[in-house]
Image (cartoon, rainbow, N blue to C red; front, side):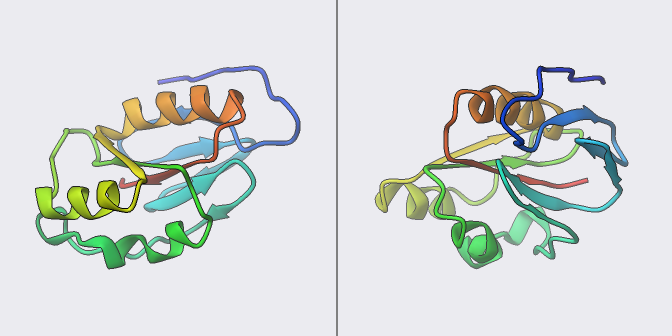
Length: 122
């Protein structure tokens, strides 16, 4: 799926996503990663979806986001609700969606100059 959007102010824009790769700016990635407006953290190592916990997002939280978007691959799969509550109890947004939707949502929020981080599972 192509996700073209105007490139503004040197931010990371997700140009396309597929089940096995994501194109950010002009680079193609074929492993799970974390992306923010100005950083790409390649080769994100995370627990299986069924056992994700907040520690899997430590590297993303170092970017001090107002919102973390979790893309769970081709299918929307919700992690343990307790983990989501941990984020929310600290005043941070946490949204879960399939990876294609997470990419689209990230692009919109990044273009709005929001401090958003997308943790994308391939």
